[in-house]
Length: 102
Image 1 (cartoon, rainbow, N blue to C red):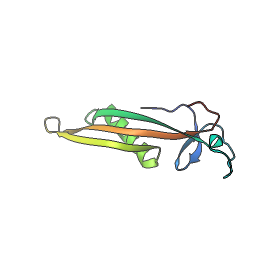
Image 2: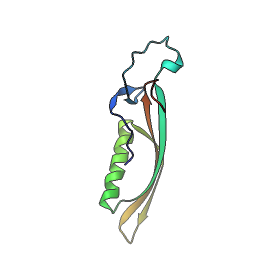
Image 3: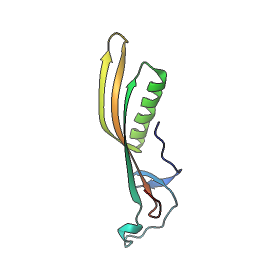
C-alpha cells in the first residue's frame, strides 16, 4: 500500500496535511501557502486473494475519507473463480508546508 512520508498533522482544503503547522493569513503570498502534492497509483487486484482484498479495502477507505481521489475502477467477474478482478487507479493528494521539498 502506498505510504506518504510524514505524519498527518491536520487537514487543509479537505486533504491530509503533513509537516509543520503554519499560521496562514489571507494576505500571505502563494509561495507561503501550503503546497499541494499528488501521486497516481494503479493496481490490478484479484479479490479472491485475501491480501488483494485487504489492499482494495484500504484504497476504498482512503477514497471515502477524502485522502485520495478515484480516477478509474474497472471490475470484471471471473466465473471460474467466482470472484472479481479489479483494476483501480487513484490519486493520493496531500499538502505540505511551504518550506518542505516536493
